[in-house]
Length: 410
Length: 112
Image (tube, rainbow over all chains, first blue to last red; front, side, top):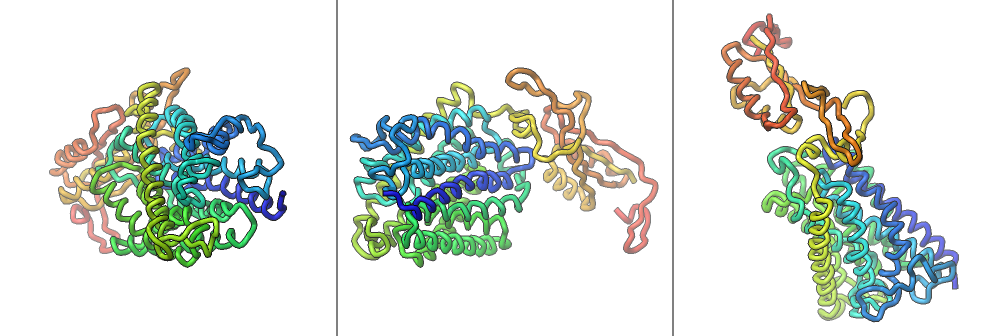
């Protein structure tokens, strides 16, 4: 039975999540050097096209068609067969099935765009496209099935992921780590300073992400109701807390940077994602503080101590943030907030926390090793990395034959 | 006094500034410029055909030095900005007649 309020909110949420991907393009674009600004924007923006087409032809089916194995959805929804104006029997049963499908499609798009932040300034555009298509098919869609699909094994197991802590953030974070290992450092890293070309772009991007995240998390209530309001509140509070926390951390190490404050806001949004609809909104304060501390120090450790060139810190923010958020869900979740959830460490035993840890390990390991294999495959066929001269000139000119800013020179 | 005008790669700027400081030259002027050398820019291989990148972004470093320091400064800049690939840039040496420190009115080599 279609509920008009629920349908309106779900469609608006889908549009808001769509807007996050160009927001991410600006967030990442502002952080690279000027010669790679367009190519970085393109890596996110192209996902709106590529992933949408794949999702609607077969990705949604792999993710959400009912399965018996628990690992892959069936082929029941290929080419949107049986996905129409009537509600689905199992997903968002008060809205048209198409609304749920398109909402989920927006998640797939941004997840692919997320891991591009680790490989900017050196990956070949053709390699990125090929990898993105393979990754959506063999990593994202199956993982979405495990966690959210009818019959998915992690869903049956009882792991909780409200809006994509595992499916989106842990998944993208571990993929980023695998690609960094395959690609290696950018030419000149870490001896040469690689400074952001425009921090205002980063801030605009952050603002768009923050706005869109209300659709991402509160929309995942799949209804226009109290749970949506609770998730909305938790989302906002976590972003706010984490932004302030990261600001103080950067202050302790030097000055309260704008870049750090924006990064903190995104980290807070990441951590609350799996928890938003299961925890009391006030739990967003410890979650927001925790994720910034963990994200900040894992960024320093990975980049400055271990010398991993995860260019825009995708693993530190999304990988570590996603892990922390998934585990925090196992601590703070309460059936008083969401009867469909479970009670975490604060209210019951270790049961849920253990299940959350299993889901972190399963999704993290699958994304990491799966991406290593797919990445290697792409490297052996089209080659992952641009040539040395192309990297020096910048990917805007060498991959797209365009410059970000016009005029006769520069 | 001579003005040393070096057109170098953007990514080598920090190293060059550090090298100048080590030799006692702290004052300098930096400009973002575009240009090309003998090769008329770069020719890159596209999928179907070659295409040209005519003007490439560089950084121009201007520093005024004492005559006796000219070889040292040239060596420092060249050593720190060389990669061996096309596009490492050029150094020009220009005579300077006089100089004035605006705040105090000092003139000559004392100003550098």
